[in-house]
Length: 402
Image (cartoon, rainbow, N blue to C red; front, side, top):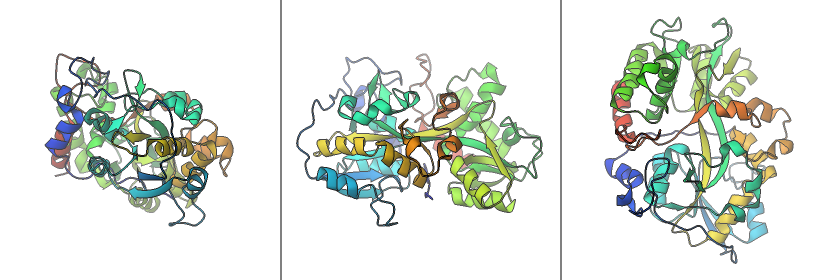
């Protein structure tokens, strides 16, 4: 089982936001057209052709993404890569996206497994460069619904190779909650019958969950993208979370703690990952989950290449290796997520694994609003107003929790 992300902890400093979310001031060409995300990315060219492998590779990854057998002798997809390519791999794991951003700025790492709350900042700051997908044969089999998306591309140019994804689902105990839930109202309604038994995700990015709910229930606010909130929309989402605060029994960032809460019945309704639900069900607790009618937030991770990398051929070979169907199947089952490679499901040891994670379900994936860094340039395309950035989200989250 994976030790899933303790995401987005701590306060994001203003200087990091400026470096990660600027326009021409962060290295972009002033004559270039802004991307669909509202900022001008630095003008960088992808690698044209592979050379001789450089003999080494430094990988920065979420725990569970680049296993070399040191944690479990039976879990190792680094050694076969080293034997095949001659690229000796060193792995550094990180616990939060902000930590990954800081580490990438040192220039010591060749590739990083970036979540959507970090990828735009890496692109805007010039710390990662576009990728030539034709040099990654396995890219052809990546699910189409993960390609050319706002968190991994700009103006149709890919800045990485998709790795894995998942939704933040609504989970509930079926012995305490009837009928089956179909809306996030169970979490956000002021009169929720589950007051004091609600479990919520502990992160500033959770503000997007409130915004997603308001998209459906207060359309007059005009929210089109839960990560693009002007001041009025932002205050509405923050207000909803402040209203929810007294009803929340626990905020979680470690999925194992949430699993324990659901198993014990301390919480009966909550935001969860599918791996949490699967674990609790395996332990015998009566828990069900769904993506409600309003949709859900979620994550899609991307392998990105450092602009300063001196080992780019090894890096490209790694991005191809880690998205190989067999390796993708191994990582997905170990980590607890849907694999990006469409051929991976045929390689899983548990033949029901991909069905449980909706890996091949494009309709399911379309209901997910994947984590994307909130920046002042509105991600929904508006140019007549400024949106709230992640620094503001972080400060508001501190106020919400009190």
